[in-house]
Each structure stands twice: as C-alpha cells, then as structure tokens.
Length: 65
Image (cartoon, rainbow, N blue to C red; front, side, top):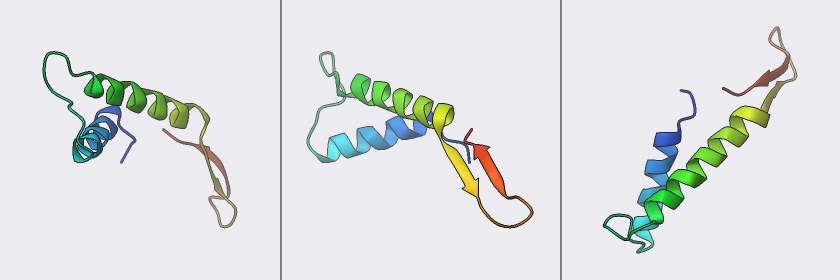
C-alpha cells in the first residue's frame, strides 16, 4: 500500500485526541497541524527514502513511492 497523507493525518488526529487535544471546532488548529505534519512526513519519505535489498535477484536500491 502506498504511503498516504490522509491516512497519516487520520492517525495523527486519533493520537492527538487520545492526548486530550481538541481537533474540531471553530478555533481548533490541531487538525491543521496534523495535516501539515502528515504532508511534510510523506514528502520527506517519498523524496528521500531508499529501500536497500542486498541479496537475491532484486538486489539494489529503490525509491519509496
């Protein structure tokens, strides 16, 4: 399964709610923070992460998508 901004955001919001943070409502900004974090993490991983397979017929380095 490919990495997903929306899936990561949902997980971040769930964790924030578990810690008592307010993520909904007119003045709540925690969901916006979760979205910003999710977007940055996914971009970092898809831009820079490499999977290294060191044995077998698939040996090599592969980008994460």
